[in-house]
Length: 375
Ligand SMILES: Cc1ncc(COP(=O)(O)O)c(C=O)c1O
Image (tube, rainbow, N blue to C red):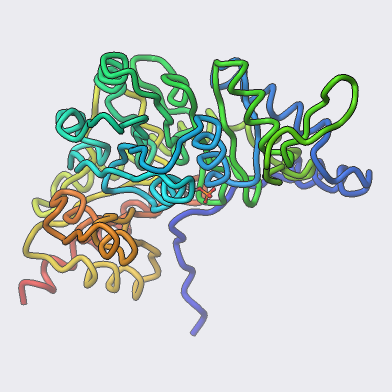
């Protein structure tokens, strides 16, 4: 019997054109940050609609640099949603500040903006909304709150290149937007990321911190900061900029697949499909559903795996992972919606490698488990 073909959760879309370009750069011998990094940055600035894009070695590096450039110190507090990939909070810890968690909405899986003001103190310096799964957080509320309390915004848009709120691309609402180019994301450079900002002074700070703290001072090279090496290589940038040309078609493919999932899954009463919001453009970086109370999510994941479908949970409830539980004395009850999404969420395959027929097959397998579980 032949090996069953697995429908993967995600698969990077690397064209022959992209491979050719990368080989060209490799053959040139110019491997570190150079002209392709410059060009990639310009194309990202145009696409996102922002004055400065500074590409870096990962989404985490982007977030780390953003917080360093804001000069966050020990004792400062940063508001973070309780449901995200832990990197969002980890960088807050790494600059010596304290992440203060806020529960999410189960409709958009983003920070519940009605709960933000409850946790603001004299020490609060910034809010890091996460555009989870490619859905924009409620940025109108966040901008209002940060204006009122004089706080900074660092958008964790790791999964949300192309997402919009009120026709404005995410990443552009505050001081910084940070994106990831990990292979699960809209475009990939293997590892990689970008910090975007409309503030030229902050952009300069990010560029210096990215490159060991090097600055040209009075015509000579000096080290003005204790910086890092978070640069992207030129062959990665060549890969990224080739992929950026196809991003809007990729998003359309994802939206079509998501619509098909929504239509077929809406007949299964124990599944909650993603909500639709008039004021947002969702790019479906991840197609994420919630399973009903009675059903064991892990049984569903196993059943899908046994039938050649790769699925997984969507993101972590930070109150349920060891480091934050222990450090801040958190429990599953601390942020009930984050906990619920962590234990009941399922990310299903989406992307160019998935066909409409695959979606029908996946939904029919999901439907089968309700019969199996009842028996
Ligand atoms: C919300 C969020 N923030 C940050 C990151 C970190 O990005 P990277 O893996 O590029 O460091 C990820 C990536 O998985 C993410 O999903």
